Length: 376
Length: 112
Image (cartoon, rainbow over all chains, first blue to last red; front, top):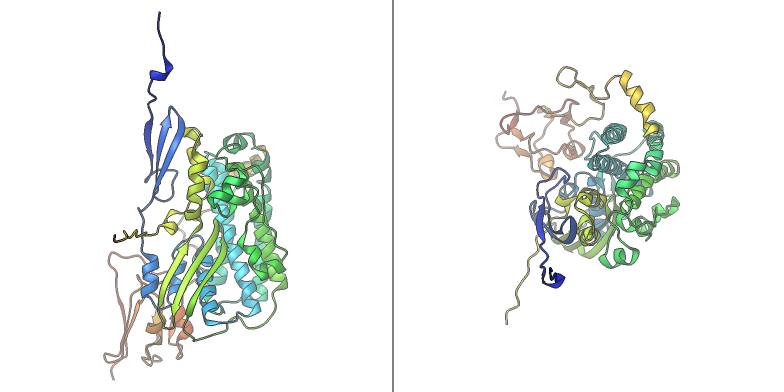
């Protein structure tokens, strides 16, 4: 007879390092998984592989040169980084932005969101092994990049930010091209609607994976499409009066999984096209730049909505041409705690889908944290 | 998937969406931000371009009557072009060529 006592059997866990170099990850982050067979029991994220010292560089630089430094925090959302920095300095120097520049900012901000979401949808399709969808989306994204080059001369880095407005204008002939090309993109992406909404294999790989319940999303401080996929309509564009004037309403899905987060981004592609078209229609004539040579003084916080979520810039000015503190919080930093809670309880093969579902952008989020020990 | 079949069949007979790069060069757009050059007949060595350059790629040396420009440091933001009072800086639409070393381009005022 075998006297089998389950209490004496010790469970053996496997520790599995995922990253920093992994085909799924575009940028280096290590997730150290503790596995029970194939089930994830614990995750420890480890950052610090691509620290670049941007915040310190911003303190040493002239405040006007920082626009271009801030644009380089993230390649994909470069315009919004530069725009947020300009808004912070405008706040500190009491500069009023001309009405037309506000609409131009909305247009370029949404162009950035469009290309970022299309990039992500392609990468996500690649992560689940849907190669043809990946190629098709990236081919359509090319139209938007060409449109960027026609306006600003660059495909990704627009470099059109200026403190007090914008450096470039969209004239009537260019606006016509914008409308025509965006309609083309809309038609091409519309063809893919049944793939995202109905395709069986796509749904099987994403539905029920990486569940982040509504209260958990709120508690973990998730931002952007991650929180909107959990049924909370949190979007920083609702705070922007110009966006409000264009009847902006955030896209929300209730199913709290990777599938919901995909659909939020997919729907936002159409919403961005609509916003650009509305902004082009309602854009008033007038100047685009209001120069102010005052030095920034005081402290302020500005929050804007990036493709990945809420972006916070905190700046301390001291009345000279250099700033005493620039603090940047990017959305991925805020989403990492939610990612950890999403992963626990899932199986090993689901990791790529769940990690990708928050749209990680690690290099933007790397910050140096100094913990000072109190002298006793 | 069946919705994409139409596109996939179309791709079988259509030309590739990409350009066969080293053999076929894409036409640059009129707005493309390419290589910079200084017209030294116009330049009055005021150092405005040096002052606004965010990546400090420009060095104006009024005593030696020349401008040193580092294309590998340049962001091609064109702030120097916007700020030049003499309109001495111009750009082409051809992108700067890659190189083995970070070269410095020198523009000098011709000695009479």
